[in-house]
Amino acid sequence: MFKFRSLLSALVNHTLTQRTKGGLNRFCCIMSETSKDEPAAKLMKRPNEENEDSTEKAQATKRIKVEGVNSEDERKYPKKKVVLLMAYSGKGYYGMQRNPGNSELRTIEDDLVAALVKSGCIPGNHGDDMKKMSFQRCARTDKGVSAAGQVVSLKLWLIEDIVEKINEHLPAQIRVLGFKRVTQGFNSKNNCDARTYSYMLPTVAFSPKDYDTGNIEAFRLESETLSKVNRLFALYKGTHNFHNFTSQKAPNDPSARRYITEMTCGEPFIRNKAEFAVITVRGQSFMLHQIRKMIGLVIAVIKGYAKEDVMERSWGQQKVDVPKAPGLGLVLERVHFDHYNKRFGGDGLHERLEWEREEKAIKAFKEAHIYPTIVETECQEGSMVSWMSTLHIHDFEATAADNKDPKLVSVKLQQRNTFLPDVCY
Image 1: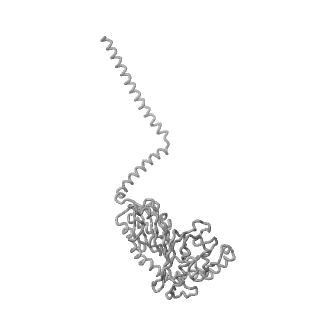
Image 2: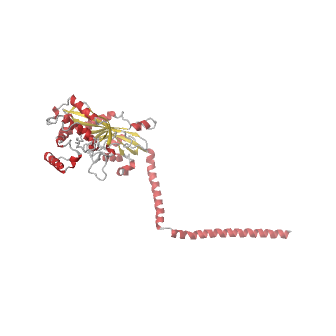
Image 3: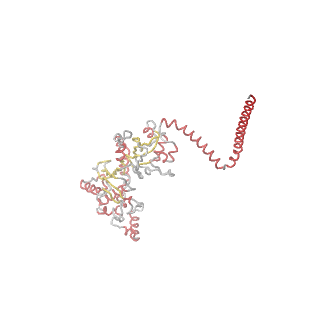
């Protein structure tokens, strides 16, 4: 019995020893095979794959470094979507919108972006690519056109005393008058429901065509003429096809149809001994030169160069020669966000995009920078009087067929060269 137990114990120990050795051998084989496969895998790996791995590691490292640098600033000054209320005098500027690659044609946005960078509201690279800050202006004003209520939307760092610090780096004729937080998806152009413009002009523009414009200070607008002016302006209200009031628009282009809600001329007033008046027009949106042509056509009718029926014809399919009034007196007064205010203005998180608190500053800026510039420039240069002297050249009775007649075109060109050799149309 004792011998049997000894033999059994020896057999069990032998079996366990063999299993342990087999496991160790297999483990060693696996490790050996793995070490042998590593060089082979490395050899099978393409060079560009190795470059991709190294590039990904470098980018990851770079992201970590950048995040480490900006995280402290972003915690202190979070980047948020806001709107800025702007006012500016357009004299000396080539419009509102930037002209990338053309530093000679200075625009309002050129000076604004430079001020945003210098004040620390945006990183320097955002100034080169405005898409990085989701920048959008509500209205693209033309060369020489001013604004008292322009609104731009963008993402920036909410630094302390943001309005004051931006204005420190702006010229006196450009000012940020206010700012408000908006929703992340807000776009000042797309969310705008309507725009209101004003046009300041000397009332001598409504004088008879045989009136001596050498002394504009002597002219005073009669109440009957003002009533007729407003009656003609009222014809623009509603939806019309304004293809004749801009350039490169076909009569059947749907985008030429625009909706006008208001157009009136206010009571005249005296500035620098001359009489002026302000025309106000509100519409959903406006095309290039549209407002100036709307005013120019009414002036032509009042002065007797065109008949009243030209206004109805101008909305039709035929081509009508519509004169374009000077750009000096045009001002973007305010922009309207009725739908946005109704949806988000009372949600407890966002303010209504209305500027009652800034009205005093808006009025002060107009009195200091916009109105004096218009009046002084008009009195010194006489842009309106010079433009009125060209009205007799326009053929308000011509049709599209007439404009295609080479003989008639040649006669018109000769007339223009005879009377005004240096005027561009």
